[in-house]
Every structure is written in C-alpha cells, then in structure tokens.
Amino acid sequence: MNKDNAESDMQSGNIALWGANGFIGRHVAAYYADKSVDMKLFARNFDGFPFKAFTAKARYCYDFHNVDAFVSELQDCQTLILAVSASGARTFCDDLEAEITCNFVPHKALFDALSMQDHSIEHIIFLSSGGTIYGDIGHHTADEDTIKQPISPYGQVKLDIEREIIAQSAAAAWDYTILRVANPVGRWSKGNFFFF
Image 1 (cartoon, rainbow, N blue to C red):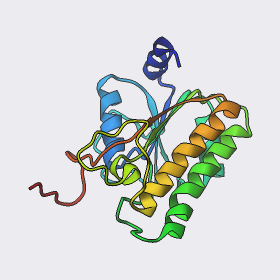
Image 2: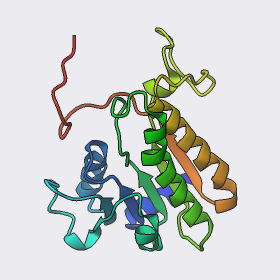
Image 3: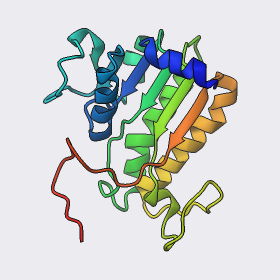
C-alpha cells in the first residue's frame, strides 16, 4: 500500500477498529481520538469505555462471532484494524479446539464474507502475538525468517489467522499488516503485573 494513500485513509475516517474496548483497542482509539479522526468502533460492549470523543453513533456493539450482523457496517471503511480476541495467551491453555472455535472461526468467517462481496476494505491490520508464535528462541532476536514454533493453542491460532489473511489477500484485493505484539502492559490493562 502506498504510504500517502494509507495516511490519507487514516485521516479521512475510513477506519474500522474491532476490539475497541479491549486493552490494545483502547490505545488505538485514544491515538486517533487525539488526532480527531472519525472511526467506527466495534466491540462486544462499551462498558467503561473512557473516551467521550467518540459519539455513540461511532460505536457498534456486536458479537464478533455474528459476522453477518456487522459486515455491512464495514462497507465504507478502507482500513480494518483487528485487535479482537476471545482469549489471551493462557485462557484456553491446552484446548486447541476452543481456541479454534472462539478465535479462528470468526476471523475466517469475516474474511470469507469480505471476499464474497463488493467491499471497500483495502488494508487489514491484524494484531497477532510475538512470543507465543515464535516460542522459546533464547536470547536471539526474532525476524521474519525465524522458525515459528507456537508454544500454545493461542499462538497456533494467531499464526493460522495470519496465514488466512495472507491466503485470502490476493483474491480479496486487500493489503495487510501483521503486528506481532509482545506482552503489552500499561494504562487500561486488566490484572496486576509484576516484573522481576
């Protein structure tokens, strides 16, 4: 994607953010709120959502599993940011079937729905996972050539979603950016974190 076009899309309010009321989603929303960019925010609910800058009109409450209910709301959006997940790295621990059902299936359903209709999405940004995809690489730096050895069902499914985005990108005519985020913490995080 052309950087100038991407910057123009980001300023024109053609952005949809799924997972807007989650930890990372709130940070993304805050970034764009500070820039006065209009966005469509999607979440299961907006309980405790900290931004008055986004009117109720810009907020959409849907269950991510119910793709048919919300896919039409993406019609005028050019950039889709996916910061949505039904689990964290330890939610389903050793339950690959639950991870597939709760995370892979709805993402694939969304990509399939976008592929089967005339959509305006030009760029998908997916927040993946770093450590759970690469596994234990010791003290080495991971790059694109590093062998992926997911350490959990969560990591495996994040990698599968990445592969699905890539596989469908050519036919669906969207560019993509995959961000392998590693253990973010800070304002709006849930729980207590201790560092040693």
